[in-house]
Length: 368
Image 1 (cartoon, rainbow, N blue to C red):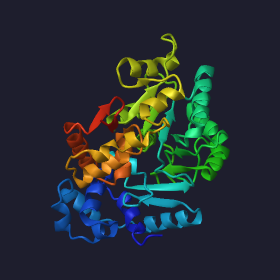
Image 2: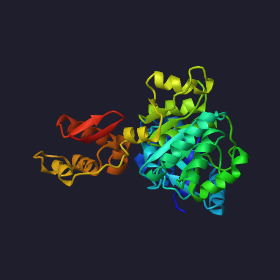
Image 3: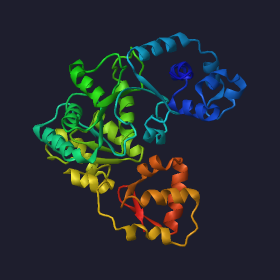
Image 4: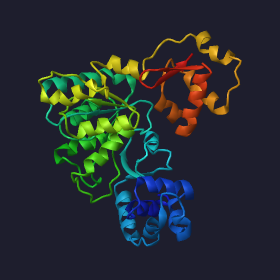
């Protein structure tokens, strides 16, 4: 365990310090320990912190709770993931409100090359079940990580179908890892921990209270390349996840349904209002996301190297990524480049203006 872990947990417990403020502080001081050992004047002068939050940090006296959590982590072989950890879901870092600390039990790579979230109603129809199972089965050869919320209905179908087809699957929980909710999914959760994982921002002894679920949903949306809504009413957790994904500039897909079917009302609404791409099969998903495997002509892929254009180091990194595939999603560029999102945006814009790359629907880019 990291020597910084007690301070990392303490930071997540400090009153008035949320994920946004925590990231500001970590960017300024580097480690959680340095934050707690900084002088009050240094803390309060940071933009976004101020006197009240500085006082909360300096007055924090619950390190015993942090130590207790560490004992739980060690006993059950749970991996804490701080925002500076390379294994932390890097896609989440592009979301302004990403948790500063996550708790993880599993084997899946949370930074896999292709990640989808599959969400939907707890009270699904046979139609929704069949489509969810077929979609995930048809993606089996793509080595995609399937993320959902371990809830009844579409969530559980997504997890079970992924396991059945040898795909890793991660359940994002609205409570601590000392319990499973709903309890009927304890067996499923155990299987997922072996071929996938369980992820939460909540420490042990945190119950699955109602307000935790929307909070949980931002992780589902934020750590995925795309969110797929199978069936949902006009209100509910799946709609919240879809709205969050849109807010994070992620692709959202929705399965269309009958206009008279209340369980398809949410999906139809998302499609009608251009908040989701209409989805009927796996092939459409692969096309929009640029995940299709296409034969590449080496001479064609070499064309960019022959351009007599002065490129910056950042632009060269992006060109190298685009040379590997026909099309690449902006989130993959952010993830693989190792650059900040602002640096990627600036480089991509510059390359577009120079007519070196082209912007395509679905936040995709390719060489011109």
